[in-house]
Length: 330
Image 1 (tube, rainbow, N blue to C red):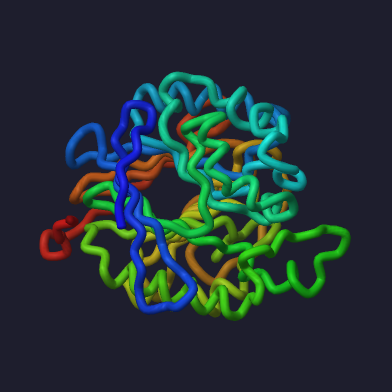
Image 2 (spheres, rainbow, N blue to C red; image 1 turned 180 degrees about the vertical axis):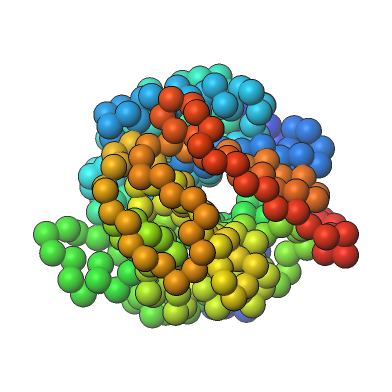
């Protein structure tokens, strides 16, 4: 089924696809670029600290870059509210860490958000509740869904349930597993749904977005559960990049045995962990501080740029598609 919803001057199509799995479904949101054939977005993660740890400074520079690029929307890689998510739909942290921070006109666009582990420590159902869109219509948060922008599909994946320690050794933290438990069934359904959606996709570019790292040289390092369970699905379906947060840094690592790139944009607020771990794949860039990323995509090229909290461009990397790889998206 499909329905049309008005959102800040945009017309966004939400389509729910039912596939072979019994319990899962993905929502597909069609958000076409303002400039046909050219998408511009910002990506930020690990930000929700009521303006502290340079969150406000990063937000200001997002507004500057967003205006320069005339962005279409923003993607969040999760940990939207520290330390323990939202307490409910009326939690003032929603305003203090989101609405009152990201105030520039250029980023008053839709924000597509996944959940991080700190979000799961609060009332997850509150953060997923559409009533938050009545408070700030930009805020579109779901567990797993697809954002289609013509030549590119973003597959937004709920990664916290993969992390086994959150289930078996939560320590003093409480994780809200409502509508998720049992873990094995949830993950099996999600992987099946993702695999089917990737296979159906006709987009030129396929990017998967999750909170947790897959490859990382920073504090959290690699996530074994994602390497074991999620990575094979990405490689089998020719995904171009996995984009994540969790580690509070900016980094680019390229796979040594596939075309996949691992992109971390988790510098939305608290950073500077002073950790660097060895990695089996190729580390192209690492910055242990606050910042965010822009991504510009056309039919033939994807351009990634990392910025620090002062708006300085730290790293610029582009990748292109050969003519025989190009395929239309409908």
